[in-house]
Each structure stands twice: as structure tokens, then as C-alpha cells.
Amino acid sequence: MPRKLIKKYMPDEKKLKDNKYLGWLGSYIHDPNLWHLTRKSVSRAFLIGLFCAFIPIPLQMLLVAVLAIVIHSNLPISIGLVWLTNPITMPPIFYFTYLVGDFFIGKGEGVEFEMSMEWLSSSITLIWWPLLFGSIVCGLVFGIAGYFLIQWFWAWHVNRSWKKRGQKNKPS
Image 1: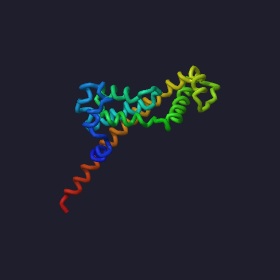
Image 2: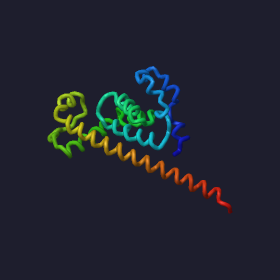
Image 3: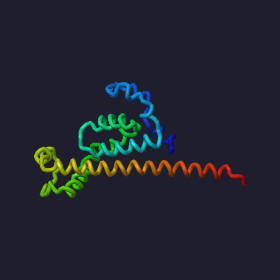
């Protein structure tokens, strides 16, 4: 796996460990497995990062940080993936998850969407169950797909590197 490329864009481990806002994690944040770039830790990070990105709750980063500690995934990658749902991408992503949930359970029929807080507060009782169900389904599907794609990509990259190394060292 291109560790150098990933490390180039990752935040500094020491700065994150000393961050006062992450102090509530205590000694757990000093576990070296949360910072290693291995096939297992990165694929687990994709699993929980993508899953939590689809869950419509505030403070998704706190949830993913706790899950990263529990399942020993790479903490910075896990937290970074949660930002797939940001203020710009949230409306289309959560509308999609609502449509998925409505497809499976059909509780939100006849709801006309409007982009306003007034509409959201008056319609939340109609849309919350399809939205939550669709979010969990999409989170599981994308999280599991991300896990297996990283597993595959990592193995492919390692095999390719070994083949290149073997061809380079072949006598002419």
C-alpha cells in the first residue's frame, strides 16, 4: 500500500495526541495500533468511517472515534471518512438514504420535500423511520464494500510491487 502517500496527507500523530479536544479519550488515544497503516487497520477504518458517515446524528466524529478505539482501526482515516457527509453533501446523501429506506419500508409516502427548517421540523415524524433505516442500510452496504475494496486494493498493490521488484532484479 502506498504508505508514503497516505502519511503525506495524514495529520501529525503527536499533534493529535496532544490535542485538548481529544483529551476525553484518555490513554486510549496513545494506543499505537490506532496510528499504524496496516491492511487491517485501514480496511477497518473504511468500514466504520463510511458506516458512521451515513448515520444522521450530530457529532459523528465522536462515535467513530469510540468505534475506532474499540475495533482497533486507524483513527485519523476513520475520522476523515466521516467528513464525506459535510454541510454541502448532507442534503443529497440523506435524501438518498431516505429514498432507500422508503423503498424498503414505505412509511413516508406522499411527503413533498422542501429545503427549510420549518418543513423539516413539521415532517420529521413522517420521515424519521425511513431516513434512519435507509441510513443504516446504506452505511452497512458502503462500509462493508469499502472494507473489502481496501482489502483487495492492498493485496493487489503488494502483489504488483513484488512483481515489479522481481522483474527489476531479473538477470538480463
